[in-house]
Image (tube, rainbow, N blue to C red; front, side, top):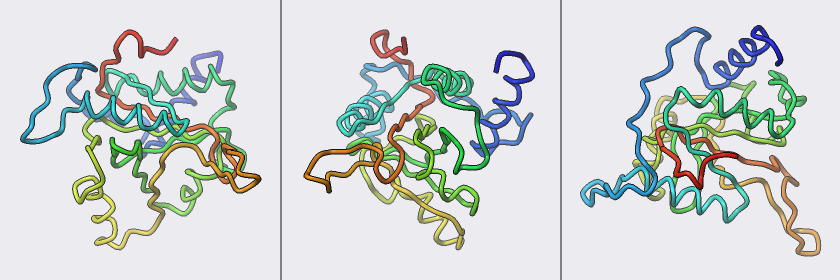
Length: 209
């Protein structure tokens, strides 16, 4: 990806992975919230900045990573930064060959650092499992304090419609301690999980280097 055509091709594949058609306008950027802002509303318990911090901290406890970007427009650039900084190969439609997959989260559950992902096609059902790196993208509006009927609304709606596909609750990279009780990451799935939350302004200490 050293020229404009290569970059355009990369971004087109990212857009396809996120369920957008090439050239389709991005959804409106969610309201930007500053991390650490004291705007908690007890009636809604939905302060996105506080929930984002809780989600990041809980996911970090299970070796997952969280990145904040100010708006939806920064997501593609952040994915490209992750790909380049980690030396990942180009985007692949064949998941058996792909170094990474980009997933869209329907909900982020803060108190466990869990992402709800629904893949609705046969080709994408293995996206959360095969690539060694999973990049999950969500808007700040997808943050919920805990698992509830509200956080699982997209899953319930898909079930009522009879959608085919795969719904997955993802909490960190794949891990096992079956062998001599030694923790191994990536034994049964992705070794690396990065969640990008759009609509959260990172504090200086949280900004990527």
